[in-house]
Length: 397
Image (cartoon, rainbow, N blue to C red; front, side, top):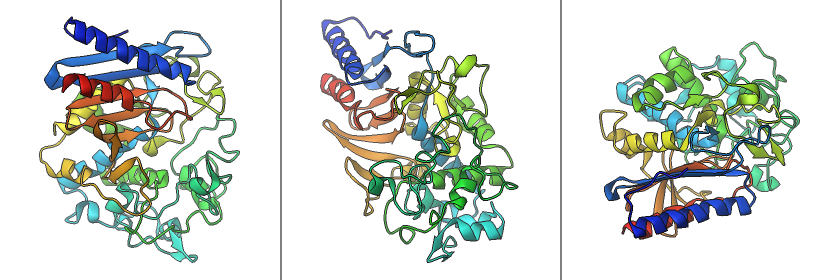
């Protein structure tokens, strides 16, 4: 399905080119793909889906099929923290407050969350460090205590993804189980604390970049602590409902009625498996990437974010887009903000976020273009969507 722009030969030609680019993702190995692109000032909107949404039913992919966004959700987690800072709920220091001040965990747990040489090293870590991936935390999803995913050339063996904890993709997870023992694999932070060396800091806070889902699980727990409400209730009340995101929810926490194996969500393909059609469970993502949405809803959120419609003052967006270039930030990323990245592409630069399941949410501020979509596969090319955005940018300039 394609949403048509006013009928002109130029726009028809552009739509055909975009259709061809999206269909090219099937030739590149995707089972399905969906994209929505808007350039409001140019009066342009495009939406199209290709391929098979579900291996278990064989149904065609449509723009109405929801998809798992993985780490794109981090932009919403970051926004919740920044909203609380703007409201004064984080104290005078705002996002420069130290995490330990909020007593999310008992002291004996906080002392173990980040260590250096086996000694507590978490006291100096601020929310800004965690939001910008400069805290020194390892990523429990793909790193382990001896190697990062970069060192291992993929998910390290002792990580959540690399271990037997998710090998069959059927385990239901919680972010933290206060009464669980250290070996409990059903709590993300419990698992993190149970792995030897996992809490050893990679660097001094603020001195380098290392992507960390661990930090964002901790940030979502902070949101719950400060507000007294669940993370999914905060998402719903502060972002989803104000934006009118009717097809968006936190998976496994705030789901609408779903059929067998989480229908009608489109499949995620990982390790050669159609995860949802096979009965797989992605609940470990949570605050680091648990959002389910459509391309249309994601563009709606991105436009609201960039138009400052979710809060009353400019500082929040300025914080999110105050780009840093710490050591360790690898191309194509040219800057990290708070819950957003700046990325170079052939037509300029993009502001947004990507997700491991192939999801993308990006804004070209110079061209006024908004993009959202997915190819629902973990081995997708990093910039699979760049050619689509660049094609629109060339057309409207």
